[in-house]
Image: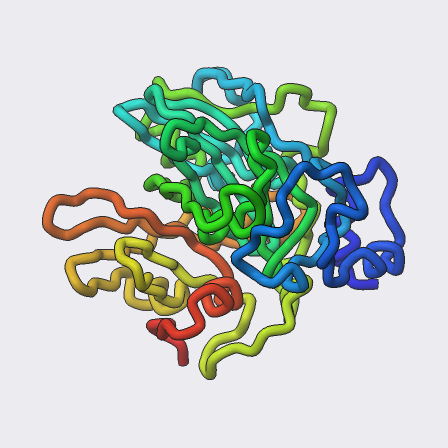
Amino acid sequence: MNEYVSKRAKVVCAAALAFLALTAFAVADPNPQAFENWKTDFAKHGVELSEIRSGGPAKDGIPAIDTPKIVPVSEVKNLADRDPVIRVVINGEARAYPLAVLTWHEIANDRIGGVPIAVTYCPLCNAAIVFDARLGELELDFGTTGRLRNSDLVMYDRQTESWWQQFSGEAIIGELAGAKLKMLPSRIASWREFREEFPDARVLVPNNPDLRAYGRNPYAFYDSARKPFLYDGTMPAGIEPMERVVVVRDSESPLIVSLAHLRESGEYSLDGIRISWRAGVASALDTEEIARGRDAGGVIVTRMSDGTELVHDVTFAFVAHAFHPGVEIVGAR
């Protein structure tokens, strides 16, 4: 039995699904409207529908957080120093979204500094990305489709039921196909770093602490897997698919740098962008208890001219290569 695939089944089921049952769903899903009550216009799509694959759960089988419970830093007692959190600061307001919570929900629809946002985390890609949820005059909120493309979360908006690729922020199927959400600067930080930097900030906590095994990693040892779940693509020479890379999205063509290269050098600079690595952040995808995960570290990405933090995420190399196949990965051996 493939351990990390069976772990995914536990995320969305009260009882564990058998591996063969999950595998039966993990196939190309070119006709999704046949399985669920979608209002999506599947005639409009920017990718081949055959690229969409079922990851096991149904629509909203992994439930997004729609009414986030936010409490002061001082009230949080169940996070360890190295627990990874998504650090978001908008219009002077700071908030932390622990992966101990988001691993089980993947999306939190929230509002910070007057801006509606979607905080997203795809465990299968280790991609934590925050979006401005506004699209022109539309204010969107998102749920999970239960589908994957290149092993990456496919979201849907509740207003038009268009399907969105989490890694790119682009609508790939439906009425809004071709539209793109604005990504907002955020980064993975340790709980200790966040609470020391923002002692008066607020933090996402579970609405119902008994709903899931918050703090546990349902994808235990996925970090150590030799290949990703539901991804069959090739890789460039010199880097393994499950190695972490930093993807900096400051221009149309991203800058992609191996995290191992950053750990060795401590810093990398190019074209006015500085990427700094620091220790002390646990991997959310290593041991069964997130807080005990190996030290994956974290990065800070800034524009050298003024110190502005830039949009980036730390993901697996296979994801970066799948969506940006022509971009060199700096530090690949």
